[in-house]
Image (cartoon, rainbow, N blue to C red; front, side, top):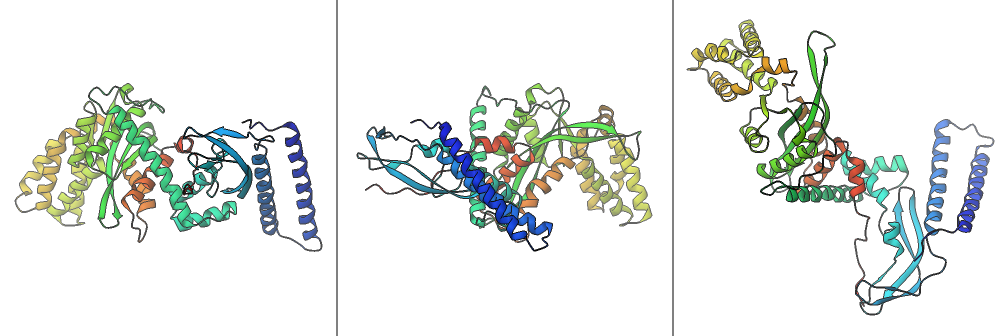
Length: 455
């Protein structure tokens, strides 16, 4: 079936739109006569007019693909022959409102299933919504609670959708992301790791990996960890306040998240690192807060990486020990903490351990600090790390937990289904990783959510 629009049909649509435009302009001009309009009022009037014209133009463009001469029959998927019945009208919701289209409808005498061949070609989903509207609903749904998302979409496009429609569009696209990720891991995770993902956004410079978790309230399960991993590079620049010191800032972060067991999460994060060019990296660095599961995953999936204990967490333990020894907030405690931090900053972990050792008998906080430092002392060579120009803080992953996960999934009173939390979080990682266009391009065309029963 030939779907190429004819020149005469295009010219006819052009003339029709010109008349419509002229009529709308005259109508708006007449409404303004004798009244002093405001810019706000004019904006709204023109916006509604443009939407109306856009809807007519979109419907007209779709109709150009309806063949003038219809084939009497077509092969059916069941192996039979479907015969032409009539031009059947369908309606789909778009970013320009509801669009109606009459297109050829065929029915198979063998399987009694009917269909419109133009629909999959055009991406026309009768009784549903267009891929464009689905993408917009997913975008606002991944950024706002679904009720607010519907309101935002209505204000921006003048198209009314339900909060449930925003939810379905968001979760459906998130499910596509989850399926993509599962397929990538299944292909890559074999004994030889032979089918690795293509490097689509290579990191130039030092290669950083961070991991952490943020709790999300799952309906019927309580608070569960939504794991988050970040892969990124850095850039060192002179400090604004103190130019003699370099400020190492994060660049090009990408994220992976899941609501699963640690082992599965680690495999997926490894695949994301491969996508960012892990195999080509000269220097790999894993920064963590001291949790043992982080170092275990680092050793399993990134064995050649330099492991660095986050400076902020090390500093927090130093302050806890100083406050335990000399009293919360006292001058002696402040002086002690400053001394410890200065020693840690210059890589003198052993000196700090010796100075704290005499206070372990009656100070649990000091014992905790000693244990923490001893377990991580080989990850606390801060003088060496600074000489190399490496980042020593886990601010990237800490920030990611807040703006990628918590900002959307931990708002007041929110409870999620397990799948809903996974899919929305996964979609947010794509948005925050600058991969939205590729994600939208991978989404399948919308299909009807119901099918007529065969006669």
